[in-house]
Image (cartoon, rainbow, N blue to C red; front, side, top):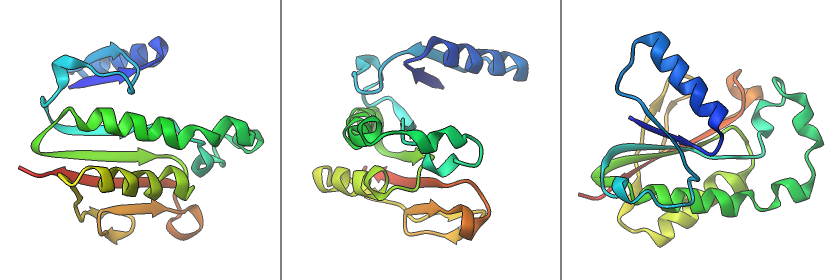
Length: 161
């Protein structure tokens, strides 16, 4: 398992958690998700893109998020799309790619995934069951008012064999 982040302190937390759990298969890397890691291209059976987002789905836990300005979130969809584009290169043929955010904004969620799918006919949505809301058609937005959880978005895609 390879876990990448742009912040060293987050990698330290991952390594500490792995050590605490006795997991020896986790490798951490200081890396920008938009920049290719050539040794990972076509390597992974499963890739999780937990992309940076506005965080509006977790306002209950981080109320200061409500003070983010439009300028702070304007470029997020482009960053998210760049990370998704890059990470898709790591998925083996027949492999799975999951895109997730902790926001409920469509422009950071379904719009990013739909744009990706239009540009990548070798990927398609995969229906999945979620324990909170049941069956999906491949994408789900969890809403605090409806699902009694924080706001999240999840999309599951498969690369054609």
